[in-house]
Image (cartoon, rainbow, N blue to C red):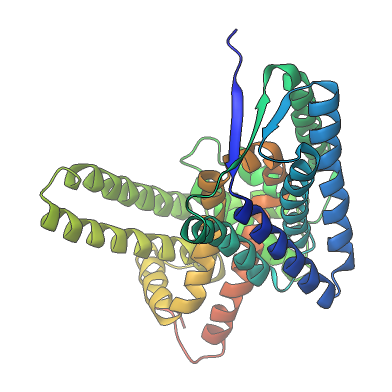
Length: 356
């Protein structure tokens, strides 16, 4: 079997900029008294270092470097990945009230740091770090298995509250055409959880049966429109430049509108049951009337896809968190924002179509 070599290279300026960001990030966390978050990040950064330097380098002899000190570069990489990733994960799990601000800070830095380095040090001699992969496949397989096993055991041990909602949504969405009904059921269960009412599998399956027909029709309709937009894009990329750009702008606008409406349509179906026509009209009108809030919901819904594109390795190693709590946490945040819209409706300042 041919040996694979994973190689990364960093300009020294990139490393120093990232160290400065880590210091600022740490200072902000301490300023907001996120002591447990800082502790988790530091511990997991050391765990990264233990695995990367201790196992992969000292035991497996799979690491090599050109242009720098292996120990110090690995220490920076371990803290950069371990501290940043796990503080972010801890902020998610603890449902921090400033989660959006922390997320924007981290994501914006991941975009800005390479651009700053490319602008101010384009010709700097890079530090190149390499590793062979065959020597530690067994270790990686063990880490992944333990992580996913822990997620499964945790979900199986949950007897009440919202512990099983995430796993129920995943399982009930497997036929694909049931994604709409599963989403409506998750919204119902999380709404009950927020209200400290009965929560769990009973609420989920009761809502699944209640909203199955309408939620499935809405889901299939949105999936059809999404497929049509994707097909249109595949066609227009072969057109001449001026026409192609104009049509692509229209397609992107329609796609954004579809995503905005899809973030509201299932909570609306659960909270204000009515005809499909009324539900669609209300979702469109409310998305327009409360555009800033719905843009926040859309950004949070697209976050997993963004992470998958930008950080596929992170998704691979920490993907077990999604079956554990990922989708339900995003839905819980969405509901927190959407509840403010519903509060305006229920106060009588706006009235849904077809509703009293």
